[in-house]
Length: 370
Image (cartoon, rainbow, N blue to C red; front, side, top):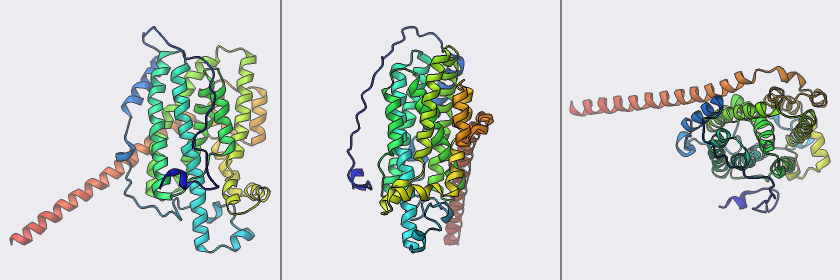
């Protein structure tokens, strides 16, 4: 079955064209660049992996409980709609929510791939071009993995959310070379990392845990790249230029906050949009989820030098201002360690299984010989 046939909420135009502006910049001096970025580039080369082999795709996934989502995390929980649902209906609701969430991950990863390619094209520094080339490959791998999970394990996709599409379009249409960094590396990637991490740390299902842990290992490098490049560049900008970037961040953060409700799922169940929005806003789980989702963005924005009065007021309004003091380096190092630990545990278990098989074969042979 084609992906096009798996989309919920009606037919989807398979092609979205975004008119791009800006210059392609070549760099003719091939001298050594910034040591930190070149080290990150070397790490990006060394850490390439194949999603078809590193991930155990033979693991079974129950489409009606793909993530082990508790009832309380669903927006309909405790409502009159929930009271009318049987177990099958609730399982189908979980399937739809997972399809919606991972579809946004998928569409965001394709956007990240395109933005990384745009950075290769437009950034003036050769060391940044080198690293962005490795990131383009990373994002292609992530899109491949999420598409396979949705197609083979869930059997359903949702179209890109309007707010995510709006932020992607704004990012790609801007002619300034730093905007793909700011829109993608800081906002969209930062938000995605927090969402990935929340699911990775709460799910008891091995396949999605593998997918998210390994993707996050890559994304930790990507956010580090954006921080390095933008921190250096923003030190050179005027107050007016910094305010323009802060306005972009403010608008993008509100867009992304409002994207997170999954209203499309409830609409797909026949609930009017106004009621679906109200039910989503009443969810205590959503309020906690929203705050956690900004745990990567706020300290990153502060770190790169965007911390003007209007931006601080916006974060106070969102209730996430205190996240500015979070230790982003610690979060990123933990992302890498979790992926490495998961690998070690998996391969140790596989080795133990192989040893047991050999021992059984030897024992069976000895019994036969006797």
